[in-house]
Image (tube, rainbow, N blue to C red; front, side):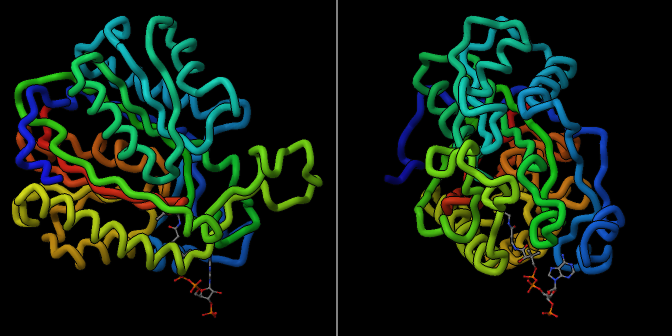
Length: 333
Ligand code: ACO
């Protein structure tokens, strides 16, 4: 369907944003002490200098709560106005209840529809599209969309193919209805063909923790970096061009590209493929690494001084599944 010809009565607008990263830093130098790696290699191959690590005893919900509190401090919003909370995460506090429920309890609100979705690194884009649809349906007015992950809980610190990449964090946006254009379109895709190349096998019903030996490495995140690398570039580039195309827009119309922050070389390659001017791509990977569902809201949050009201923003992500997509929106703050 050509979305550009579909007139919307109501648009979902992002009217507030917040973020949070834990204080504890894990630098490249720290990793040199535990595995056979070095700062120069990591910087050159990934663009990452350090990541943030959430302390033991705290969980994904704690970071999400901090992100919402940060949003409330900076924008004129009331917790009691929230109608729905959608949490994109692959690292919920526990299998049940949903992390959204735990967040509500910690915030002291008990009137919202809250639930989690898991689409790995594409989670925030999936949740944003879902949240925007709820607002456009006019059945929900104030929808909070969160991307939050404590992926450090699944990183084997001895595994240099993953320990260099991942860090913890959370970002949150507030969606509201408006007659002005906000979220324009989203093109989300997924398949199961990438399952073998990027996964955490244990902790679900197939390999429950109760059946694992202590040294079983199924409890850790594992990947074939090369396969993921190539597929990420191809899928994100295609999704960006497709979503622009079906809205009769070109790359010249885009003011900002906010790509999932997985590897600076992936970001650069996507930029080249879609032919976007280099200084239009927002990047903060050096400081946080890959925070899974949190990378995109965190990157926008850190760059709100650059993005002006009415700017056309293109978001794109790729992750486990494989799952991927691209979203288009007019910035509305
Ligand atoms: N430190 C030092 N040397 C290393 C390291 C390391 N951490 N890892 C590999 N090497 C060495 C290898 O042994 C190899 O040495 P050799 O040439 O002597 O054989 C050399 O460096 C190159 O290794 P490659 O595995 O080819 O390194 P590559 O350039 O593919 O980089 C990386 C690996 C960073 C994991 C990359 O493949 C990548 O980023 N892939 C994408 C993965 C990803 O982003 N996953 C996140 C989830 S999905 C998403 O968010 C998109």
